[in-house]
Every structure is written in C-alpha cells, then in structure tokens.
Image 1 (tube, rainbow over the protein chains, first blue to last red):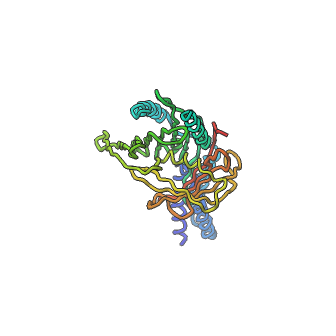
Image 2: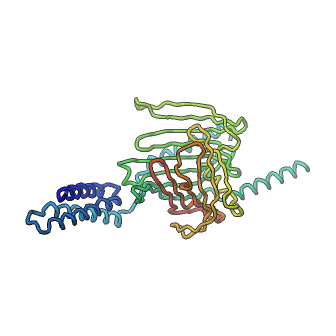
Image 3: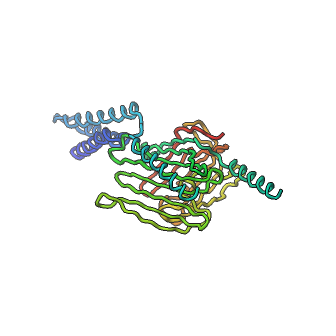
Length: 107
Length: 259
C-alpha cells in the first residue's frame, strides 16, 4: 500500500513538473495537489518507520517546485500574440488581389 | 418629375438601410479565445474583427475581416494564423467576395467565393497543399439561395437584428455557405442579461445558437452568444461546445464604434 502511494505520488509529481514548463501550466495544479496528498499520506504511513524518507521528501520537493513555476507563470507571464508579420503580409497581398477581382466583377 | 421622386425614394431607402448597420469602417473588436481543459480555461488565441473601406475604380466597399492568432506560448505547439475576409456593399451588406486563408498547425487551406447575385451562384475556388509541397485548385460553381452569406458576413448581419422588441424564444435563421455547403444556423433570443466584460458591465441580448444537420456544435443551450443591448450590438461574449471540448470568446477591447 505504502509503495503504491509513493509510486502514484511520483507519477503525479512528474506530470505536474512537466505541465508546469509547458504552455498548459495552469493545469499543473491538478496533478500537483494529487502529488501533495500522496506525499502527505506516504509521510503519515512511514512516520513510525526508521526507513529512509528521502524519496517522499524528493516527491514533495518536485511538487512544490512545479507549483512555484506554475504560480510564477500565472502571475508574471503576460499573454502576447505571436509574430504576425507573415499574416499582415498575406492580408496586404490578399487585399490587392481582392481589388483586382472586384474590378473583374464589375464593381 | 417621376424620376426625381424615384431617385429621392431610392436614396432615402439607402439611408434607412445604412442606418440599420450598427458599425462603420474603422471598427476593431479584439477577443480572447479560451479553451477549457479539465475545467480550467486556457487562453489560446486572439481573435480580431475589423472593418475597413476598400475602394475600387467604380465603388467603395466595406471589408469585413476576422483574424485568429495563437498566443506566442502556443506557436511552437499549434500555430494558428487564420484570415477571413468578406467584401460587402456598405449599405446592404451584400457580399461580393469572400476569402478564407487559414494556417492551422501546418495545415493550410484557401477558399474564395465570388458571388453572382443575378444568377444566384457562387464561383468557388478551394486551394489546398498536396504531398509534393505544391498546391492544387478545385473550382466549382455553386447554386445558392437568396439569403445565403458567408460566415463573416453572417456575423455582421447578426448585429443588424432588431432585438429591442423581440419576444423570448423567437428564432432567427441564417443560411451560411461554408466549405461549399449551405448550412442553416439558428439564433434563438433568450432574453436580456448583464455581462461583466473587459469593456465594462453591459446589458446584453442572449442568443442560443444551433446548427441544422451538423455536429459542429454540441449540446443544447451550450452554444451562446451575448450582444450588447445598445445601438452598437457588439458581440462581447460567446460560449461554445465542440466535439473536442468547451471554449469561450471574451471581448478584450473595442474601438472605432459607431455610437
């Protein structure tokens, strides 16, 4: 049971850290919260054991890092549109052609 | 004398018709398109609707333009640079030429419709890219009904609806020519609602959209559009449900308004 919780925690924490660096960073919160819950359960389950808790600490650390990245991106990253130079050029060409076509239509 | 009266009446009717048009050349509406993923909305693209004047040697036409551009963070994943244009009569919004030039994640397509309103036909040209890296053209002559418009013109026609005295539940039908196919789009008036937008809190007309014999839009009452209940009738908010999820279109800015 303990192993399963730790494995699930690692999977969700990895997913959270991957999502946090992608444009989908606001989706990070879902796996990150799940990873935190798994991490806390694992900590509770191993509280009396003397075995190493390094893996659980690592899991919680990764989760906190992913949450920090996602929060930073949601606060400081401004949404801006990509390069529209080509689109503007296409628009210009299209209008020039359109005028010729409209003239052909007798307008 | 008869000619003079006729000319006067003709000019008067044109004035009335152009007064019906709630926008002028130079209007620019900017929207943010968002897509819902697991219930969380992610801003995907900026959609712009712009009107401008286009002069030919004989006449002055109104150009209705819609563009969609993905935000820079999405460009490496799925770049969208879509351009939709329609050249219409500035008084009646009768379309003469429609162009759709899209770039969506590497996929390109060009569609052009030249309207012939006398014969109720449209000369269509579809240009797609082939496997060799070149392009191929597909030309067709399509018969259309009297009130058929392209998608861009339909959006602007929608703003001409007089909803001030409309009763709840009344439906307005538009025929839209898209991908060489005429599609019936219904807009049902659902009453007035106050909407909080980036340009202030606006009293709006709420319309629900359904598309006949098409599965482009999913769900009942899931596809909604809010137009401001003022003389400008700006579309400020839209919600839609498509086969791959839910989306939203929210107004970001509006300039060059008529009123």
